[in-house]
Image (tube, rainbow, N blue to C red; front, side, top):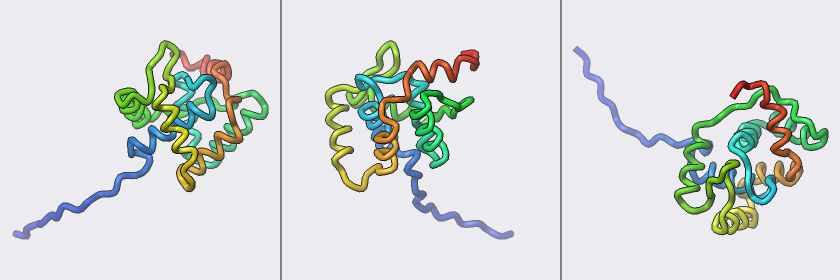
Length: 148
């Protein structure tokens, strides 16, 4: 009978699953693309979903121009929930009735990420073009038929 021998090897973690990466994306979303540094959970999921592909980013950019969100549905990522929990526990975010809000430390962290060159450049580019034009009302209108 043959024997199998397994050697444990390090496994790289995808950036998409690294809490600090996700937290940085969330903080940039709240800082650059949200009014008063606050957003609903659904809206945060929309930006998280859009950042996963250039085509989705283009759709979000188009929605910013037309003021109409032509997205039937978008994904809800469990890693975003984990990152939100870590960010709240770290004092970077505060959970409020309407969703999440940046704390003073969250603003400072987001500003440091903004000043860092070569870090999250795709995210920064999207938020600069979209700005604060994706509103909670647009999210509400797009998701009204979901039944939740």
